[in-house]
Amino acid sequence: MSFTYPKHEKLKSKSTIDLLFSEGKSVSKYPLRLVYVENTEENAERIKMGVSVSKKYFKKAVDRNYFKRVLRETYRLNKHLLIDNLDKPHAFMFFYQTKERLSYQEIAEKTIQLFQKFNELKK
Image 1 (tube, rainbow, N blue to C red):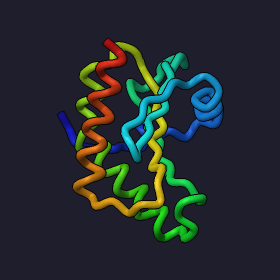
Image 2: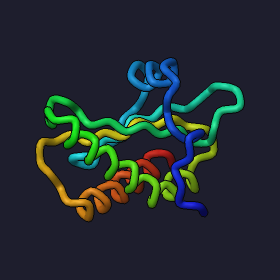
Image 3: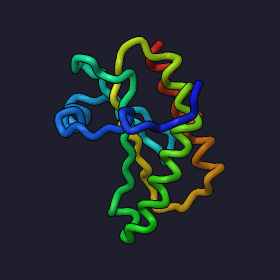
Image 4: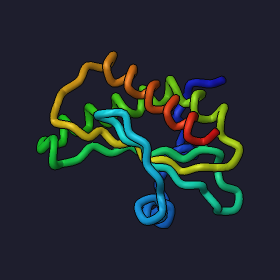
């Protein structure tokens, strides 16, 4: 298992993002939320992931960018938890939803719990 987050895994398609917000299902582990939908496009990657931090909670772009980097890093190190349990291609959007400034370790723990919760739902 390679711990990478290559360009082809990044969620950039506007149509897929719109689909996520209109038909996507969600699983939460405070303060993180994972919205997912099965990707039906032809030749779709096994997994597409996007991250988001709301301007509502962090007004400064520097702060939003910091938490987006942390989310991408925790995803990169724990994506095997998702990939190992997927049988069809999926698109995900990963949200940080609180004003609290959690440490990297706390976010990493919550990410693992969130991915495990997602896996239990998919079984």
